[in-house]
Amino acid sequence: MRALPPLVILGGVAYDFLTPPVYTAAPLFSAAPLIAAPFFSTLTTLLTGIAAVLASFGLHDYGTTADTVQAVTESLTVLTVAGLAVLISRVVRRSGERLASARVIAETAQKAVLPAPEERIGGLQIAARYEAAQADAFIGGDLFAVQETPYGVRLVVGDVRGKGLDAVEAVAVVIGAFREAAELEATLEGVAARLERALAREGMRRTGFDAFEGFTTAVLAEIPGGDQVVRVVNRGHPEPLLLYGDGGVRPLVPTEHALPLGMGELAVLPDRADVSPYPPGATLLFYTDGLSEARDTTGTFYDPRGRLDGRIFPGPEELLDALVADVRLHTGGDTTDDMALLAVSRPAAGQPERRRTMRVVPPDGGGGGHDTA
Image 1 (cartoon, rainbow, N blue to C red):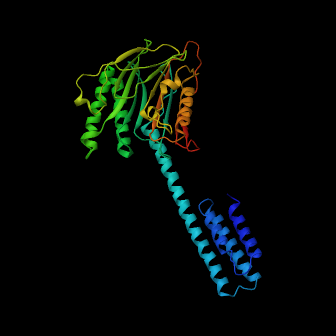
Image 2: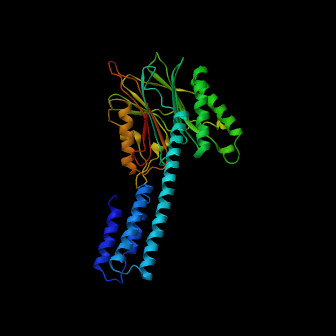
Image 3: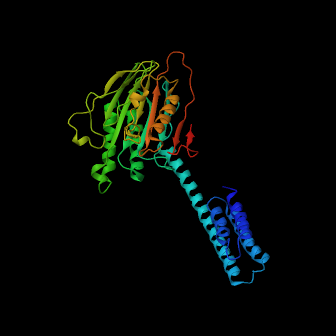
């Protein structure tokens, strides 16, 4: 790509020498600065335009036709296009600067609204990922939070209906309410009730469709310090998976299916936490529907339970690495929904501590991803 503008100019010179005078290389000379404009700096574009103008005028001067109407018209055409190319380059550079600024703002908002959990909380190993479906969008309606409380380690993973700033605001409301309720409420059911009230207050200030149809699917979990169990309240969210140390996988199916948060007034029965064994060496995997609803080219949904069954991972970070790579393979890199992943491992006896990061990656899988420690 760097060699293309000068090659186009050289091609124009060769074309002019090898063809009769009636044929002109002006289109090639005009194309060179236009090619440089979106890919190179403004200075490089300017120098390319100058080279193209000099080449066009020099060839006419060499052929003693510089004073003809055709020569003057061609040279002015190349000069005009070169000037436009410099202007285009300036616009592209400014747009790039604005995009970079917006990206920094998005990253800062992501860290503030959705901070990475600590790598070890209450003796548990934690890994988290946020996979954005849209390039340069680092946060949307998916959420997660982990907190050590007097009642054990509590966590929430959820998905707010909708997109855009309204969804981000709802994420901030849910996480803020969870942080407070997790410390104060004696039961997991009480935490869910607090989140329900917080979303109800949030809905009162909204207008239009969101005032009536705003809701958040969520799963809340509590891992007491002294018992090898996990308590789960599922409010319309995909079922977490329990991965055993021998490769077995079991979904934590709720005893009673409940409505999402924000729709509590329609519920018939109160929340009830389900208790499941959570032995050493096992890992809890929480995820949003961006994982379970990822499709391949034939429309087949991704099945996390089937894809993980029989596989053993050294730790939660390796689990999420493998899961993200497998989803990309399944979808061909074309995802339509954000995906939040949270893995919580209870280390087996003698298992060393491992370093963990939360990675936020755009869908192209390129350099736009970033790690937060």
